[in-house]
Length: 458
Ligand code: GDP
Ligand code: ZN
Figure 1 (tube, rainbow, N blue to C red):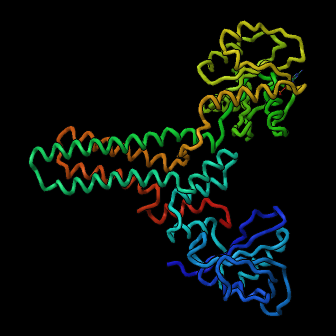
Figure 2 (figure 1 turned 90 degrees about the vertical axis):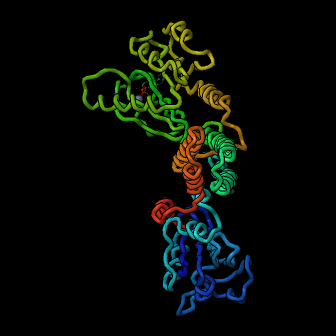
Figure 3 (figure 1 turned 45 degrees about the horizontal axis):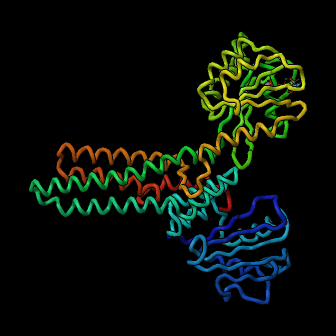
């Protein structure tokens, strides 16, 4: 039973002209009332009403801030407790004054994620919905945002519940027949188990298929920008990111480390990695950079190969092209403002014309074409499918996979004529793994771990 009252600043610090302090718990209304001056009494206020007044000093009754106070009574609030939200004008100082006054009472500062944790503990949302709130706070693109939003609304939970129901039915069926060792009952039961487990497995596999797309939406398409030194990789990254985090210089090999930049193109999030020129070198520092480049190349979903079309193809270019030819590649022929000295046949024989983009980063030309090429690759890949339930959380993915293993065990056991009370154990395991996704029967430490990832005020 939760019996203390918590408060936190619910809006991003320093942003916007209105800031909100959220208070939740059994004493929320009384505690705010104690520092509120108005011609209305909050303790008598109906649920979901807004009240104009002033936050005042507890002792002197001096006016501190002009505010609007919203009262939401249990259980019709996000936490299912009494919740009071105080909206103040203006930034950090006003909101901090209000917080200080609140904390003079027996209200305590909320831990990160504690409001959402209470919503979970009070049964308002399940664990997968709570985790989606984390993703929502962190989501970096609009698309990722809408995926997380769907999950908050319970899309994944609904599907998990359905599959669990099927498994529960199966377990009930097994339970009924466990005491009838006759051969035909046993084989009928086996067939039933096989059918049900397979259908649940299919459903889970479908969910898992969306997992990779979910990851891409959340973390961005990992895009490695590769090429020999001085072809214009950093300049390209800067142009795409429209800010100057990478060091752009004339000295070959200055990009020693991998630089990351998160950008969005037509709603597609990209995590750009600028890598040091991939080549053999004796220089130790350079070598570390090159090593990282190779790793970056390995983890990349998309490779942008930059070539300087002002120069003939170099042996390193050819080596690099061979290394990446089986990947999703876009070739950027840079420095089009300079005369062409590159033999196009060698490029066109290796890469699809649609994936070759002519550019001059210096003259800001060809950026649109590059953005279109990137978008084309990923939209034709069918990432847009809107009503898919995206599984985008590593914990969920791991549990779904575990459930599949248990179901496979169950199916195999029926084929090997293993007694059905033993098969029951596998079915039950699958049911439990799915239950963990929505937070049934999970331990306190996991709950704490999940909720500690929140930022304050949520
Ligand atoms: P990196 O080593 O591949 O990262 O290359 P940089 O981005 O550091 O660029 C190397 C040099 O090429 C710099 O002097 C850039 O100003 C220049 N550069 C980049 N893009 C172009 C371009 O489109 N045209 C011309 N003429 N120079 C460019
Ligand atoms: Zn560079």
